Image 1 (cartoon, rainbow, N blue to C red):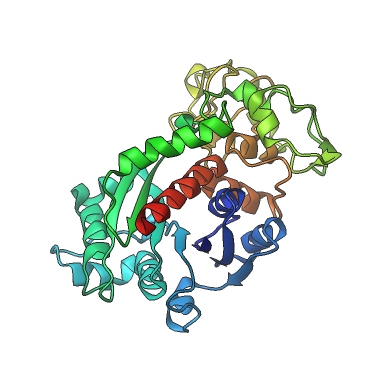
Image 2 (tube, rainbow, N blue to C red; image 1 turned 30 degrees about the vertical axis):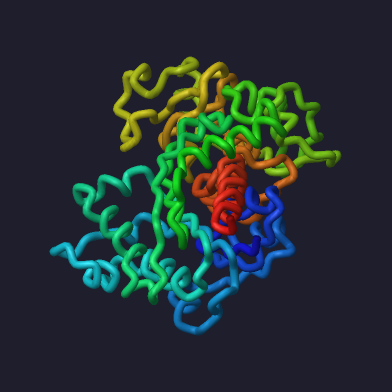
Length: 367
């Protein structure tokens, strides 16, 4: 399968498709720093560092360029401009990110597209936006005579053997109607389980990061011996692994973290903690899954991201483990950029499953 990745970020979606044997020919990312991480880890893919608006209008992509288009236009682009009119929705400048994703899909005409977004997309504006998205892809006038059948699926990371309670909406669009998508979903699970018996097993924070020892100033540490099935799945043969650095916290923040036990948060501090996150200053529990890894996992007030045993937040390598990135995946750039890359990524274990599912869809289309 030839694949194009739009809004690629560091390449969480691309990685799963590559692991499934797909050829990710081109990727688009606006941020040069994030694109550098993608290129380091996906050197065989042609990275286009540009605004999706330019990509759409300059003829970069043409009909037949790919069998599959993947990507997740950021949810900030979804807003509703008054009445329920598909033309009004697609032309509203506030929806430009979705519109350009849709335009590329319409131009390339892949057999399948995969669009990832936040769970809340289904309830924005009382569900009207979600209905407009589905209607837009299925409208032959808007899609150049090539309408898509769209199958939405809410995915929970824990169901894919990923140690976090992340939930995302996946839209799978096909140019032919699928008789029973749920059956293909189950068949894909069975296929993967035969090859990787422990793939979908529940994974705890300890299972994920328990063998990672002390951090280092430059993030380069000796590659630890894997101790669990999950660690073995993500392990690499390198002598060292990267990105295992700790954030320097203020004495006040460190003292607060010290007073928070496993499973507790800021409510035990009896202080006026200003944070919009209910899990602020929350300490992870070894025997549970983590909450959703966000772009602020290095900030105690950003959520429940304090290490289970140490008075610090998660290192980038620990957060990457919880996101199911393999240990040889290296993140480049500033601390802020790396946190953004990891927090915004699709967990590769989920994207690998989606790639295998797409293979089945294409096989069914051929039959």
